[in-house]
Length: 201
Image (cartoon, one colour):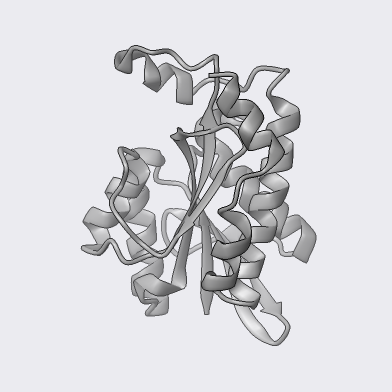
């Protein structure tokens, strides 16, 4: 079984925030596949089914962003999943708004959710899809970044965000159906909206 795990914070006050991009992506996947989320045997929601005859599960951890690894470890233990079967989707303030970065593994890059997963899995070898949220509205001071990622996108940013979410949805499905290598080649390249957001910084 392949898992797509969208990171975010579960309370309604975090809905639509920059840090909840992962939740938005997996919601779109579930909507397209007509999968329904249900409570899992742990701190997560799960929706699963078959795509082209192969099982796929979509997961939303409920352990809050900074403790995402708790829920991911529960998934791993319950289903016997190896890190390579866990595609994690998250926001990234080091990427320009609209840009995607699909990788087979690596460090946490300063992301607390990824850091928690690495800690609890004792592995950096899980694939991840980073969704860029950096824009001209991002503060320069590091101590203000927490408020930035927990804030809502500006209305002018939403068209680029919505386009990114759709591409992220497709990237996840392609990673599952045709493989990570093909998906990385397709979705890691620059798009016009990526270039625009880079110029606006």
